[in-house]
Amino acid sequence: MFEDDRIGQRGLKGFWAALGLAALLGGCANMNQQQPQQQPQPDTAAAATPASDAASADASSAQQATSAPVTRVVTKTTYVRVRRGDTLQRIAQKHSVSVKDLATWNHLKPNAHLRAGQSIKLVSKQTITVQVAAPQAGGATANASPNAAGNRQVAAEVARHSNSVALVWPAHGRVVEPFAPGTTRGIEIAGKAGDPVLAAADGKVMYAGTGLNEYGSLIIVQHNKDFLTAYSHNRRLLVKTGDTVHQGQQIAEMGSENNDRVAVLFEVRRDGKPVDPMPYLPSSPQG
Image (cartoon, rainbow, N blue to C red; front, side, top):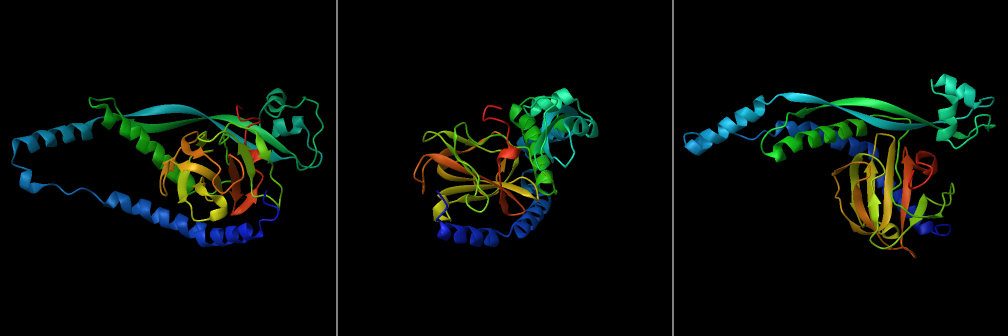
């Protein structure tokens, strides 16, 4: 649908130039550095009251609550490009995985012939440990720490360079417009008005709005210094610029704004350039 959309392409180039990803990332880093300095000041005028004494005691108890490490196992998906002469056996040996697993992840036979440039999926389990506050009365305080720890982890990932990004499908539907280099910007996934649009990976919302007409309601999520994803033509946005989002979280409702059908236009950009999202996604929306 975008073959003749030259105006849209010019608008897109102008937008990405204006967005200034490096500058925005630097600004976000500065903002994150400034936040810890904004400490609440003690209310000395109320210090003599019994109520404030009780509050101070509660605060002191909360600060002294021990932290407990929580171990989580996460699945990481990466991709490698097949070089001339590569076989599944050779790739499996190089990456310390079994040929059977490698063939299963890529829906191939163990003796399948590989072609140079083909993308091969590698799946690994990683164990991460985060510090969270020990359980205590008043669940809101206890639940805030894991969330804060998760947000800090996302912020750290956004600030790092990466050669890849592991994505989930942003919508459950049929791909009605495939990616074509130089012609389309991403893939279109069809659905019904109001269907959930999901964050494809953890990240920070760099833009949420309607600044580009050809995109309709647009969300841009930065995942690391090299990769971002964009979600267009939404009926309703559920996040705002600056929000931290997590993989699988609903960020919008699918719509047809500035589009001739109900669908989400999903883009993956590496260093600001559109790339085919398919190699970064599971084999199916349910995968």
